[in-house]
Length: 517
Picture 1 (cartoon, rainbow, N blue to C red):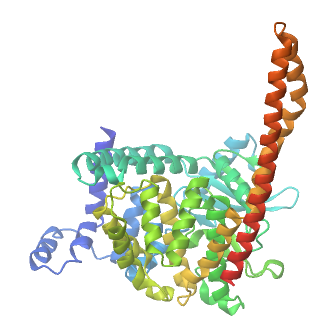
Picture 2: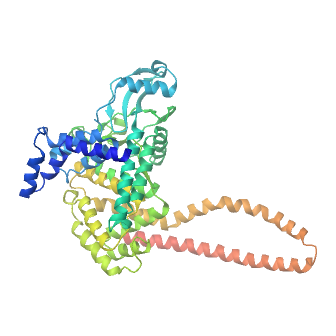
């Protein structure tokens, strides 16, 4: 019943803010224009359309606000007036009262506010769909940012997810594409990520992991988490000082190399995805700043780590091979990888799938980002996937969303950026590292502790075995010695084979590097 009530509320909000009129106004059909005039009788819809859409999404709650945040990064798909309004959802959602934030902090720590902080700014500096942020100073003088969870978020999210699950069930049963699209699995992925975002301790652990991963890259700054002051509803972290990345003119005036900034963003994204398999999955401009401090000038500052994506080793290798083949325009290999992974039926003809992928991707090569729309590419790929019954992979939904964010961010920074050529060298280097002696040596070191533990036990195991065999000891001993000799020969063969394999990999890597050069 609560799901149906939530559905009625959504319909009421749509009518209250005139989103039905907004939708119908985009069609030139005379009958639809007449219908639009009819349904607007008696309603005050004088507010600008972008404002009405933004206010409707705010009224509907966090899931819809996140949808607006994603749309706000796609100025190539949105009219300017709507994109400008939706951009306010990134960090300027109406805040909840400061008294509620203070009460939440005092309840979480069991102390009065002045016992925790030497000073606390009552006015929030940022307010988003899930939480808002206040600046403060600890008693030891450290400047911090205090993130406080919005009250009452869990029931609203559960109702929306329940409604989404209901609709996903309908799609799966009634749609011809239901099985291929896996709507219930996709909703389950959103369920997991949204509930994770409601636990600020989990967010702090995500930030700590990303901070360790990115420490050697010198391209991005991630705030330190102060674990003594981290709770489920409250998170205290190092205060970061930077300029929002959306203020491109201000960054340019400060002397920031904007094209380099765009390239660095691509490098950060692909490093997190393919090297670490652990990436920041909420990279809209409200969560990204740029440092102007002389010591860290021009580096990214990442914020808000409630949503992160993870990839298995299989996912990373499969995606890297796909991207590498794609960048080399080896569409046949892309088609073969789809079949090998089970994403398309085994009886799919490789040449037909190759031709379909080529027709989508080839027109976009050697073009600057301003002439490419990944949204359009993905839409056309979706049409191709429907024709060949490609199954949607729910674990990659966050990656696709983040890739769209990255494209929107790069488009705002440097429309001349060549996304493909920027990413190609990184992926080729990653593939060489995965196939070369470096990875072989890392795997050998990873397995060494297990072998080191087994080898000292061999004499004792042999002694125990001989003591237990009282019957035909001579025959058993001869058989054991024979097996030991066979084992020695096998070990020698493995050692020589391993050395030959390592030398072969080294030679292959040298040949590949010479070829790339």
